Every structure is written in C-alpha cells, then in structure tokens.
Image (cartoon, rainbow, N blue to C red; front, side, top):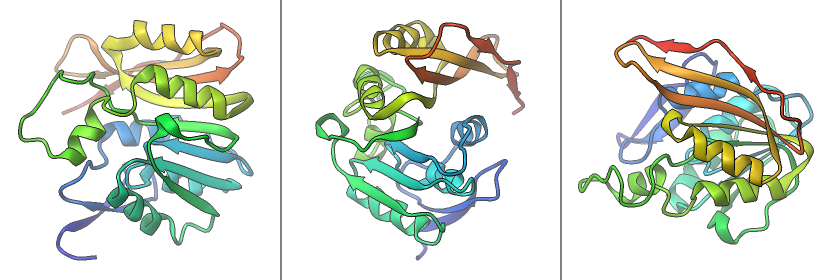
Length: 220
C-alpha cells in the first residue's frame, strides 16, 4: 500500500481495513450495521455491494463458514480481496453487476446500499466511484430485495441500513419480496428532530411481528 491508501479502524469493532482516499470509505453507517448484524458461527454470508470488504471483515471475526462479496467496481474488488486475505475464512469476491448475476445460496445477506435515487442529491464533483456507491445507478432497492430473496435460504436473514425517510418504500418492497421485518432500530442525530437512518433485520418468509429497538442517538 502507498500514500493513496489509509488503514482505518471500524468503530466498535476490532477490525481495520485499507481504504483508497478517492473511493467510498467506511462511515458511521458502516459501524452501525456492523454492530447491528448478527452473524453466527458456520453461516454463509453474502455482502451485496461490498466495496472494500469492511462488513465482511467484521463478519469474519464471528467464524462463518464462507464469505461472498459482490461488487461492480473492479478496483474495489481488488481492495476487498486484500482486506480479507488474512481473515482466516474462505471467501470469494464476485466482480460484476448484481442485476445480472446468479448469486450463491447463503444464510445471511448484508448490505449498506446506495441511498439516493438516480439524479437526486447529485454532486457534480463526485467521481464515478462515489456516484455508484451513493446513487442507485446499478442497485435500486427493489432489485436488491429481489436478489436477497433469491439467494437466501428459508428463514435466512437480511441486514441493511438505509435512510429513515424512505421507510415506507423499504417496508413495501421487503413485504413484496417475501420478507418479514423482525427488527427495526432508528438512528437520530442530536442536532436534528427526525430520524436520519434505520437499521433493518428482515427474515425470508418470516412473520409480521416486529421488534422496534430503543433509538440510537449520535452525538456530533
């Protein structure tokens, strides 16, 4: 690694990852999802849109059987492979467009997806790396739900973090794709009145009883 990279700690974990300075980087949402997701020993894990493999690196500490990452950006795939090479768990980083892929059957799907619809919250100075990571260019939420449902085993778990102001749409799509929402946790910024983020645990063919956990308050 050289000066184009940093070696950074994922807050609340024992995990460090290399990151490129010009690409999407771990943030508060990464740490929130890393703490929220429940990974069990011997499970097979898939991260859709894995970027630099940060969430898979955290999952590796729980002794899963196998790790899969899907990523459309080739440079990010190489970085994920580097971050996972010494994790002690077999893994595969699958390079390609999730819209056109047949994904392996797994027990758990995790995802920190792009939050913004195409052509919203646009920043003209964004690189292609950041635009793809932040906007639903290649991973609109309905497609993400479809792919998660198709790859999960019966009663498999889907963990994701998303914008709280899209909660209605998120619930609709999850239900349409045979997910029951088991756990919700809203995240607040102490300087804002409304929730900014929501953490979701959804179960394939699960029930409709939902646990709403106490909110998380971020202090800036």
